[in-house]
Image 1 (cartoon, one colour):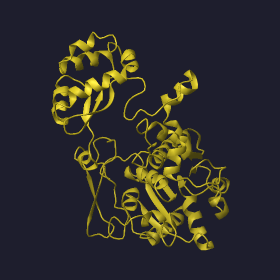
Image 2: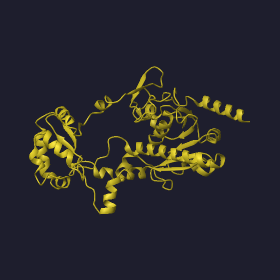
Image 3: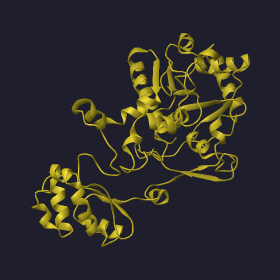
Image 4: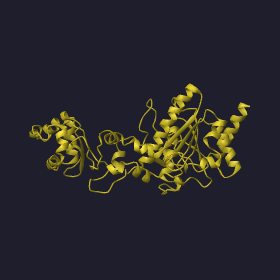
Length: 379
């Protein structure tokens, strides 16, 4: 990869589909792990969701970056034996099938770790390994409670536009895998990384959960506004919406001076954050009466000069202009696929995958031959 990749040498076998499992494998591949994606002969279903690219879905060309594809019929003994051999030599096995499927196929935790005690077995599920129920992003988001906090107070609860249940689960899986790898360095033993999607969603409630559990305060929908900080939300300007984040009383006084409303600093209704939270219904119309006199960009420029956190609500296109989009070869070998970069950089290394997304079964013979070579060398 041109630098000391942190996961170089790690072998990952990923029998996963959709988003969460493939996303976890992609993150491992981005930094050097050898990730083999196991697919049915007809391809996993994520390949066929809305063909955004010629014969390829956006799911497939992004969540499969950096991997090799091996197509197997796991209903046949030949396919099962090929997978057993791969897992016997693997560091990590990732699966996100409905609970019970891997056990029925003969790839349960105890069976695999008996052959490979150092194996880290990452199992992703909707509701835990004992609940034989499929997990889908929309359902998990709703059950996780966040949509009850999202949307206008008198409107319909709203899920996040991005697939956060899937993506957060992928992040949690990698975090759990890394923890297991650190422990294996110390003990030599592998282990189970159990990643229920519902737990990941509920974990995002953080301070909302704490307010309910410890203070008896039931969180409510406030649109884009904050339950305990004000003004901290979205306001109308002349040509669009502005996000304004006045996180403390010092910023509030600075804001009042910047917009020419110093009298608000002395108003007992608005003087402190606690009083502003209590009187938000009176304060917000006054703020918007000022903000509608200029544009989003006009306010952003002025508030930035005074060190006040504010920003526009960008479209996806505008957001992508703020980052260094990375480019990969299309699986057809003729076109280019662009995608958002990884959200962190290691030693200034490129934030793109070491290889393009694979075609279905593209590396079946290569991976099997590679395994046979490893066996021959170890005999």
